[in-house]
Image (cartoon, rainbow, N blue to C red; front, side, top):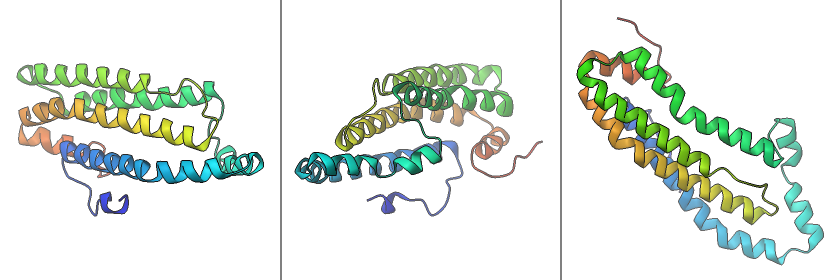
Amino acid sequence: VLGASCMTETPLTPVGRLDAMTKRIEAMKKAVQMIREPLAKFYDALDPQQKERFAAIGAPRRAAAGRANSTKELNGLCGRQTENFATPPVQRIEETIKPTEQQKSAFDELKKVSTTAAKDLEASCPAETAKTVTERLDMAAKRLDALASALAMVRPALSDFYNSLTDEQKARFNVIGSGAPKTHT
């Protein structure tokens, strides 16, 4: 399921990249649904010591990578990811595209929707650290649902704004976040 959602090429347009992210997140949601029940059955069959050892799998790697384990650190990480969803992309778009007065209302709508989506994403941040593997999986599913909703919320505004741009502006916009070198005209 996950392999089938992988792109062979990066889409050229921001709307295409958003659609590709949506496809990938939907595949991840489906994968989580597929493994949830078998994982829960397996986990429930373990004795307490086995559950403890199972929970420890990956802990040294997570610690070495500096990944958060406490609720405060998890919320901080989640919050930073949420902030990155709206503010920096909108700032980069404005700096790169320089919307005209005629494009301003579509751009303002994109900013408004992005801010709302970011707030919804922030609300999906975990309030506490999951104690079991199934709780972690459920938290991941909740976060994926929030990401999918945020992308669905932003897509119409992004599409409207993108369609309002000139060909030159679209060319500059297509380069933002694509990994391609920036061009200046």
